[in-house]
Length: 393
Image (cartoon, rainbow, N blue to C red; front, side, top):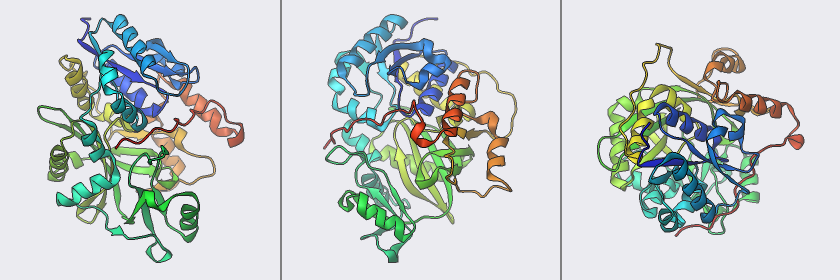
């Protein structure tokens, strides 16, 4: 196989479901896989892609010197002239944008626009304002949360607070939720929006710097409580509608290029913005299974290769995505589409779509199932949260 001019350097350790799906996309595209693992506890070592680790980070702190060494090893192993850093998580991307010049000097490029454009899309307050000005539906804002405004949502003005803390939305349904928010969060870091009911969709894009976009979409069926990760989803047709063109035009107007997921809620005939993730998203495996061309085009753009011909897939029902490991013992899933009968039996019917229950990652599936049976206080092997990262102005 002729070495590509550039090879993706894939940082593991966080957002692992997306990292694993990205490695599978590289394999389908017949491209080299060069992984930077994060300590010996990295779940990559419970998959077939352990053989593709080129560098082992000793800790969770991101370090330019370590990534420069990883870049040199990846280039040596693959024969590529340069590396491209896979945008695996928000934490990683923010750090990489801070150190872009040093990383590029070390031979590792970022498949991202400038920092101002990236933050225009990733920060919830700035994107909401941009979409409102573009004439697209966004939730109505509320001056402040109170018992009279429940249910509502507290959204962070920025993903990383000025003191370095990562911030996440709060779903405020009850007075107890509101009291906990007041006790544990700083209201000045948040803005408040109405609660939007409706079907939940992800609208997915590869927006190249030049040329036509590739689109795909999924409908989210079940989610972890508190607005956390999606557990069950299925392919949708939203990307084939004129509605998708409106949202693509908005993204183009921001100046963004790269991979991006828009979360939308269908309310009547309109699709309302919830948030955007301009990087690898958690249920990326559904895109690999249902629309492999999207990631193939993205990989080709940044490696300087032509997209590999994709093997014909046997006919099958509508592709699904499942993450059984995301079912938290004792916590009820949030169902966006009420399943017929038992929710757990609905999950089991889609076991073949589980992101980990596959030949290249079955050990990670078993690891998660064993961990789920243990008391929370006894669980080990969990990935440590990233350290605080300074905000970027």
